[in-house]
Image (cartoon, rainbow over the protein chains, first blue to last red):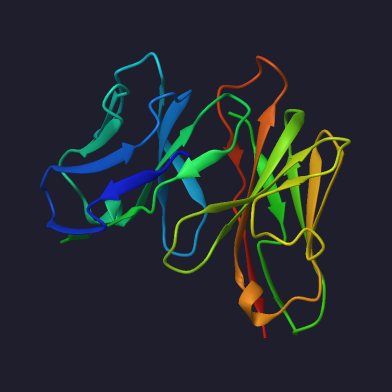
Length: 112
Length: 117
């Protein structure tokens, strides 16, 4: 059974800092891994999608890496801003038409 | 990218009433839709998988008679919470996948916040 964990559960940093969020999954047989952002009380915003054959994806100040063999992914946020404050969820899919299994999330607060 | 909508976005109801939530794929045909539930300060948990034209598959612990799912067309799935109680108050999110080769991931709706008084 696939399990996804995220460390840390919560993180508070001053504005401008670079930070790393960690995600681990127990079954390396995944189809893809996705990072989402969820603002308080809102839905999901897809940030980055990494296919199983890829090692990383970048979008603006965000960079996500994937090490499938070790069951790990990291989300790197450069030059953090208060607007980055949200909960970040890591999620994996086993096949292209399978359910998404979410991690518990990391709650990020960027202090001005 | 593909768009999935949900209606309503927010609903408040009295205990004992039934609530229907719609999930629509706006610009693609969704053979499979998924319903997730998120309790406060928790992550999303899959409730059921809905395939067009067939009965939904429910996750362990989810009551199929309480959470009725209908996927009557390739663009619409509905979740009906029957005889809702305060413990059913949650954030419900649907997602959809397209036809073979049409998409590499699931597209998520914006969610529906249900509050049962």
